[in-house]
Image (cartoon, rainbow, N blue to C red; front, side, top):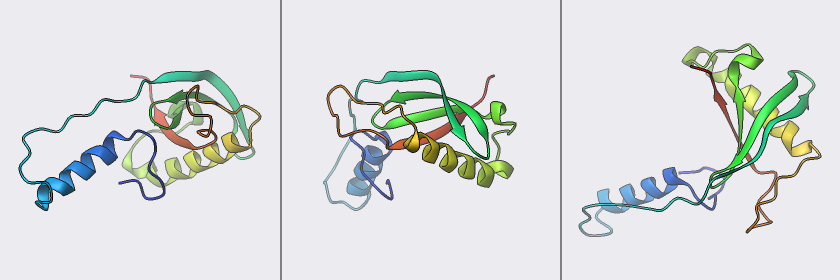
Length: 126
């Protein structure tokens, strides 16, 4: 489960909660668990954010239950693998901080209180 918040939609939290209820017998017998995900949409593509250590970073910003900032790892000169895990965490935290300081504030059309709370992920071209 999320360690610091419960976002408006989290498939991982939903599955974890259902698993605990089933495995501890708190909810009797269950044959299936289903949930409907919130609509996802894009706030910005190729948004440029400045980080003093990384320079200009291009991020895609989208909503899928929380605001996701997705970065092409190769644009930062790093590969997605276990060895680079600590560096990816560091870069993700730096990018989240830079986005929180940026002038662009994504505003959810139905929940204006959701903004500046980012989850940063990395992608790579296949």
